[in-house]
Length: 421
Ligand code: ASP
Image 1: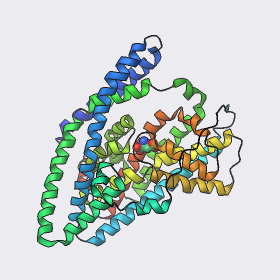
Image 2: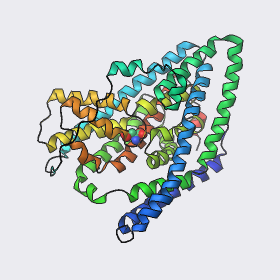
Image 3: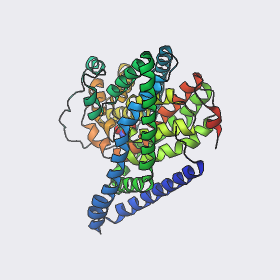
Image 4: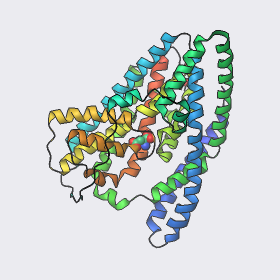
């Protein structure tokens, strides 16, 4: 794999951090002055920042399909045997489920204790019901694509993962021709990684523009009205990020969590500014493999899968939002309803796509299952932009943490790379 010069990498990270900070400051300033100077909003935010930010985000998204497909196919093709794939897959999925259930449980406990919805004025107008998500059975059947090109064209990540794994297995089983294809796939993978490096050269400007735009468009007054809910979601997210993941890394993974926390910062900046696990995926994979020492066989499988199904931060928001909306309407949640929230938020988080605001859309299905009024969404939606950025940080961190734990248990973690500064 192409190594990045460590000095250049840390300079790059510093530039991105400057982009993040400047973006936040400029965003707040525009938010304060846009009433007096409307051109700030129309020209600067609506044209300049939108142009720069969206081009950068498109560039990131552009790499997702080739990166996941070739990297995963190459990763599977380089496994020693198929049993290893089953073990890595089993451990990864189990850990994703466990971390999601932990996250919803923490979120619910906090929400029941703090009661964010008590005393908030409820002024919601009735809302039309969004269409329900397809039944679970159909979702399972649809994991196997009938047309791989269509799967890639529509960026259906689960279908792409299934196809790449099957192709990898076929390469493993195909003898000499398989070896030739595997070597070509690995070469293509190197080229795609180079493409990642090219796009990331624009990251400082890209994150600046994305953040400045997002913050310029935030409704600060609305956050004020829902401040308890807002702070509660942020607190829950921080607990998952700074307490739960490090404890899991230490106890289940048997590794010191400090290098993980240090090296994740770069990924956090991308997640925060793009609000998208998918757009962050190329960076998460690169950091996990090159800076944390997770071997490609594990990272190429667990991280794309995680970006698609593992959304701890989203599950937390959904759990807290359910309790908040119930309290808003004076509904006492029964124990059965609370357990339903845990189950439904877990499933909804799996079904949430790794793109901006997907989690709030899936909240509708959780509310319907639990029997809560859908109108409540309109209220939390008003403050969801910033929370989306924060929960995406937690979502991608869960993917990297699980990948690290699985790699360690498989002897696929290079401890020297992991510990290196
Ligand atoms: N934006 C989140 C993500 O991509 C999904 C969500 O809206 O919760 O991870």
